[in-house]
Image (cartoon, rainbow, N blue to C red; front, side, top):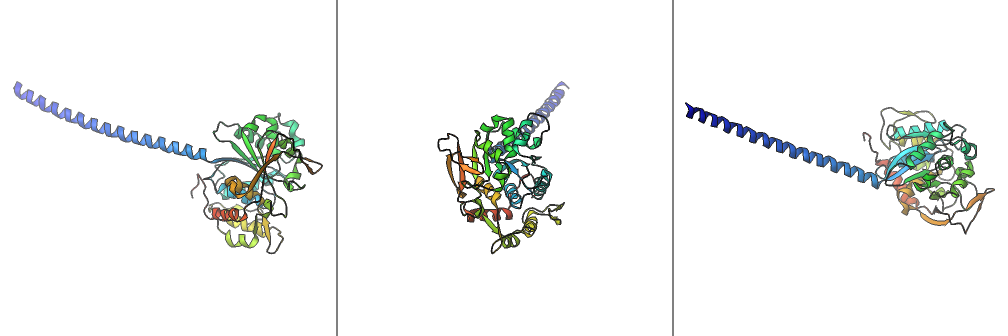
Length: 361
């Protein structure tokens, strides 16, 4: 009886050891796969961080409802999210006395680009720098939403510098620097504006005081010249109405909830809205054409080889005349001679194959 019990006990013990072995094997396999999964997750996270670090951090400051080039610049920026980490859009007004119209137009483009839920949009200044600068330390001053956002993004703990890409008047940027001078060492300003070395130009005359304030500051300043009617400025980066009508219909992602356009109508993609903007804008020339000034500024940030740059002592504008300061230690960069074919080819290629993150493309 004892022997049988011993045999029975030993048999049971053997089964238990087998069970333990099986359980251990399962545990080891589970641990292995969990470890692999964890490693894969960490690798994926590291890849995402690396990709983010390689992108150009952009804050886009724009008078969106002025004419028709801002919209195309913003769409081009948003359709290049494999290159640009667009951290936000701030608006100002250079044409109408109501920045809310610029806000609404920027909102339209963000929605058409499937980026409205992912990229902050902030309302900035209607008035000019000298009208607001004494209020920047007060709560809720005019343009405070945009100005505080510029400061926040410039001062963020990020490895890459923030590029403030401004394609309107410089009021929001000047107010941000006035309120927080430390952003001068944290950001780089690329501005589409001026006919330098000649006077005039819409963005410049909309707030010359803001421009001079920034020219006299320490913030890295790059001036992307306009030079109306001359081949050396962004004025030469033109597109004809015929090209837009032929090449833009149905370009960009289609959205399920169409937006109402600036001139009425409903639009489900940016390409169709682009056609509508061009059809409602008076153009000169034979054939009728229109420079995409602001889009060219985005292009040279994407690829600096698409324009020529030179460093000069920072000039100043006095009585609407540029005054050179050859002994000025403060240097700025001037962009000119833009490569029209490369820029426009890339623009249409981008419209055909937009790269947008966090969307359902």
